Length: 489
Image 1: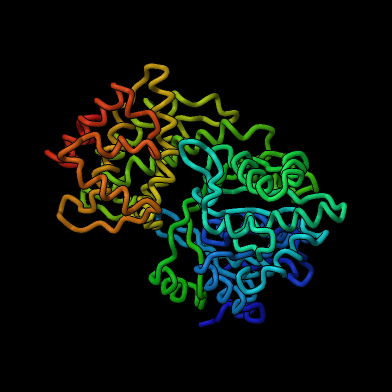
Image 2 (image 1 turned 90 degrees about the horizontal axis):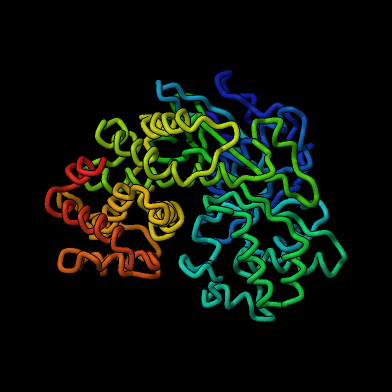
């Protein structure tokens, strides 16, 4: 067994792909907030591929953690010299292992925020990238307004505060760069949010204007926020994954990453201090990300929501189990064809029939073992961004909504906290307590869940949606998930 460290790479077997570049030649050009599984399976992987071609050696990644849970990432990456194993799991049972070397430093901000700010101010820092989850941008899901009542945001807006949030750290660095007459870095969001660059810009500008209106205007005018679409199913790494990596490849890795073979990144070419040549390793660099972004959000992400609550209620625990069930696979495909796709503009260079079929195949990959619990998490952030826009557009065009409304009903039923086998459900959501309390009244008041305007806005006022939703919820209570899906598929 070989512990993963820079000095041990030559001890790994030939079945493990290693960095072909000298990592001592890599300098930091990108600071990334939110180093988790997805970032390491996606953006860091693309940079590693570029470095293997002798490019982007000035674009090494310095990870930054701001949350308490990020300390473990700091400890693991420090112990492993920033290295980690990325394993692609193929549906035929084949595993491909690759050691990624593009993360060359990691800073845990709560220990030393000033060092983080100084690194952000450094002339060599050209890009600040983000994977901070859908809810990390701190805006209200219905009003779209930046939430200045967030306690940590309020703290960071105090004149003499030491920043705690990534907003506070990044805006302080931009203020110092502006004061020194330096050009700003680009802020590159890589989160699953429609128009993620625009969302990031709105949040940072709102924060900065609260601190200093002139600084906020400077950020609005000078900082570039490219939009992007990112895609790779990256389930949570399990102890079983770690053991399999030890057994198959002889690697002792404190936090490896497992993922599917498929990967996609569509990136708007909107950088003010240059960027790595991402297109050389398969990134689609385009002028307009929106068509690709909507395709992914309304087909892939919304389809995940369509399978996860029904599947969990029915007793399944993994995405591949649901998608290997013909009833649910048909339901997903019909949702995509009849409800999701009609809301999309043409997507240049993409065959949507092939894309939809590929999604079902990806979801059904038994090696990924993506848990429904993971896909069910943070629904109050995800449903409003991924599925409710489909419902609203279909209502406007008098299109079909019965499957989408049924998905909302399945979420309401899931939020009751018990599945159809009377097993308790552990709900993971920032609004968990509030939603569970509301869902407890689903049977006495079938409208209780969708009367929550903070989540659903004015959909409660639409008779067609209310009728489709209540029919699905009633059938869920009386006949269960399978019968409900059968009735609308």
